[in-house]
Length: 119
Image (cartoon, rainbow, N blue to C red; front, side, top):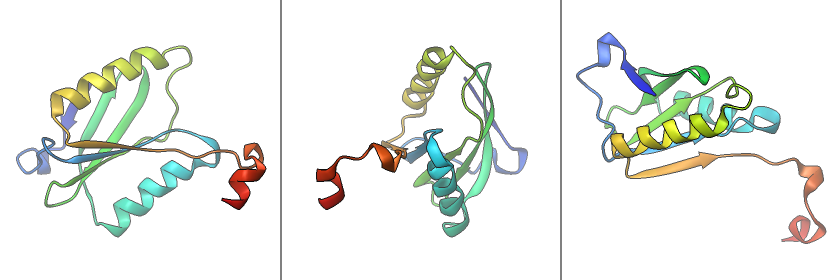
């Protein structure tokens, strides 16, 4: 996985110490919509792209204070290549030295149990 900064931000971003917010591609696109809302609400700036042979390039946004980094991924990983993509993503996360990683996900409400409905 390769990070490619956009020209206008190549000297103003810092991934180290930032909190990474990563959407899981899942039912209802809730994580992707949450990322869109965060990008708009926090006025995050596009700082670059992640390029990996296992997925269509994804966009990386960051807050001006470099505290929040958000990956905007629209398409799923290429079929049967998830493990390789996950290994590449983990290597990128370690190399970038993020302080925290938050994975946004969603679940099908019809799979909830009765106890989950009341608790």
